[in-house]
Length: 200
Image (cartoon, rainbow, N blue to C red):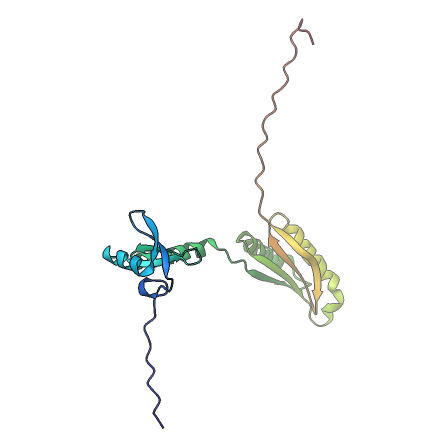
């Protein structure tokens, strides 16, 4: 029985760069702004004469578009684009705020401020009233507490789907509301009183 061959990590092949390009012909774009449809091998040779790589930038075009440029510079620009796109993305999270049906005013205010902060950061808030033991007989207290919270958050939050019961919990989801900027009204020109002797 033959011994198993040792695992050799193969170097990663650069896809759509130079000899790894599988298209027979491409529309090659060069640094001087010129472009032409030509066999891929010819485009690679011209790019290498300029000390550059040929990189496919639009593989779904007909024919695919390839650009003569420095591969390292292209990688840097692609990474930069991805990082900028990530910065622009805002991941909306659901932050939970828990209450008890007999929560006192001090504790309520403390948790309300948390909810306000979460909403101002653009996140949704899941407000939960947890009932333990015999407290389940007083679900109306939990509902009233959530209604109070919804009212206090009216300026920055909007309740999604109302208040509902799930097992031994009363809960509601509050989503942030974008404040509309009030439109400045143009001052109306006051009507000048008619001068005496003028005809109407």
